[in-house]
Length: 320
Ligand code: UT7
Image (tube, rainbow, N blue to C red; front, side, top):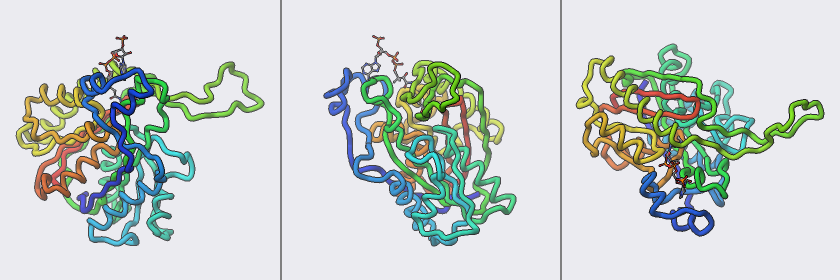
């Protein structure tokens, strides 16, 4: 596979830490010190699906293709209004791609969705199932936060980012993992009990729950392991990597990973300070801004690494 276009879209409303401390028992000092986050963007008047479609449209424009050249659409998302139809079908409609020869599907692998999605793109392209794939990562995690709970609501932001991927030989190596830890990050859809429900206390609506410290520890350990192993198995050294695009959950997590790898700060672009944790959109957002601002150039070696609920991780090395 080869990435030929990138795009992104963020909601216009900026929410600062001070704005949160007006109704939560928190402070700019606490949030900045523990997470690095200063602001996040939150959906207000926009429609989430329009944001996803806008990011997709920008990626298609940047690729030089037109929407009808797209013959597969994959969307990564955890949180959005629609359980069904899936987001990829909604984006297809928004882009005016009539089909029928353009399958659409969503992947839900939490914050690792973009990395899993790219790996899937490579499989589809190399087996001839598709020629030009649109991969969109769009999230509105702020919807599943309890806004009276300072533990989670201060961490997230909404955003969408996309890439167009075609046949090529960019992929150097890829490694995906999953270790069952179903209770470290959990969100259950609102469900009404049926007349036949026999269990007591069915969960009807829960906000996101997270064991923050456990996630923190696992994130640092697994990302450091994934990165070291993939670099070695690809016959490279850490110094061969030009840009480490890490999932943006917490600046302290990424700083701990960087220190363990003993690599310079300049190789680790960040957006969590401005955008908060945007789940699977965080890595393609880094990619899009890096490409558009000229920091990521053709031929650069990129390493993408993410972790998330599951507990799932994914790491990819590619020549941009
Ligand atoms: O995409 C993956 C999603 N999740 C993550 O990546 C999360 C990973 N974990 C983290 O980022 C950190 O664990 C957090 C930022 C969530 C929390 O930081 P921490 O340093 O692990 O703090 P803590 O949970 O141990 O809490 C320390 C204290 C507690 O008070 P007590 O019990 O010591 O009195 C919390 O109640 O900080 C309190 N606290 C807050 N205080 C002010 C928790 N949230 C807040 C808040 N403002 N927003």
